Length: 218
Length: 227
Image (cartoon, rainbow over all chains, first blue to last red; front, side, top):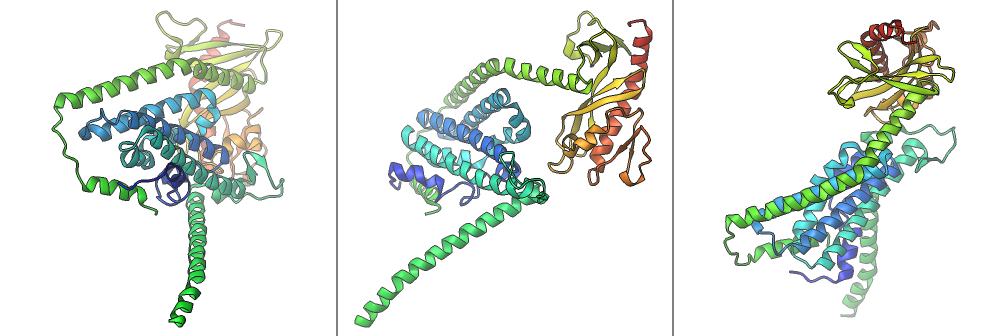
């Protein structure tokens, strides 16, 4: 098993292996409920809670869970936390709960969460698993907020419900509708890949002249 | 870099550790114990959150009733039972078992009207709404959508477009949904929202259907000398 430092475990999920933007996991909620910033944030926090709770339990009890029934046990643990999140959201922020609808229950089948249990928490210590869950959860929240911000500003002319452009702004309606989710994630991925490629090109250019120089010297 | 997690997983799976045969009772015990823990946790959270959720729902309903009846001083809950309205809950039945409508009174004891909640399919899913109805003038007092999953930005105009919602105040029943260009200004016309025809029509249909169903009962109740 490759050894990683605690910092790597934490940071990895936030950017280099961002669940939504790089691993393309958890796209269903990322497309479905990111039409406003508030919904994105609530969904992100609920998923963060479920992921952290599940990682904690799975890494604590990993010795007692037989290999043959591990997936069922993970799903059971995840489903419990989802139900808790569902009830708590309904009690604390009923408006948001209403807006998210069925998608809270669907956190159970978010591959991102089961993936972290299977690939990480079932093998590592409790502390590392929590770091990994924090990182991945924060990465998910960041991705959700990126989507939500773009879609609410373009599609509704507001941020967190506060109108930004005054009454003359004609909302770009398609961005709060489902097609807008696909468009937004496509443009975010386009921008990210473009930046990544530029960065690679620049580092190549920086390396190349030295190589040429050494060749010439030889 | 990207698939570091997967690689770590793969390399661990690539060298399978010598695994002992696990007896079936352990598998069952594990799942049973996990299930029991999960159940206990959920029951605990349910008990903790349930009063807040119920109170919130009751509060929302109370506010909606007050909104569609234009601020009554008080209101009675009436139960639909065996084709008639009754103020007393029939013995042996819980109040959730029966359809309820609400009768609002003004400060001086005068009847304002009935608040009727009803649900029927819209474009996506059931639309649940509540409306106030004045029997004497046969006009609506107001309409409010309680629950809908209509398309955000389009179908949800049935609750967010105040111009549309405002039309129900004082509209006379039964309603007719019309295209705004063909409107004649008659009191029973409701202008459909352009592009939201199905959802707008659903609202008109829900109100008309529930009035058709409950109207006779309401008249019978009022004729029964309850005033």
